[in-house]
Length: 123
Image 1: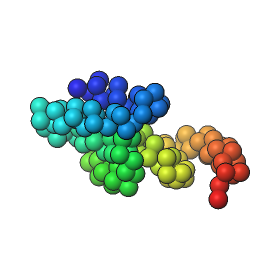
Image 2: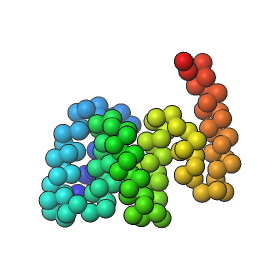
Image 3: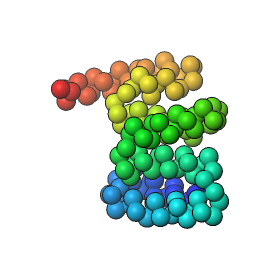
C-alpha cells in the first residue's frame, strides 16, 4: 500500500496529474490501508500529508504533523513533510528551523535567494 501512496503523492506534488483528480483515489487507498493495518503512525503521516497535497488544508496538515513529530521526534519523514507545508505557506524561517544546525547556514543562503526572487511578486 505504501508504494501506491508514494505514486499518488509524486504525481500530485510534481503536478504530473491534477491533485484534485487524485484526491479520491488517494483517500480510498488510504482508507483501505487503515482498515487492513490499523491507523498506524505511518498512515497518520500519510493522511496529514494528504491533507496538504490533495485537500490544501495547510493548517490541518501542520497540526497533525506537529503531533506526529512529538510522538517520533527523530523521524526524518515528518520533518521533510512539515517543511513542505511551511514552504507552501511561505513560512521560510520555520522551514529552515527544521534543518540540523550544520545545514541551516547553507539553507539560509538559499532562503535569501528565494526571497529576492519573490520580492517583485510580493504584495
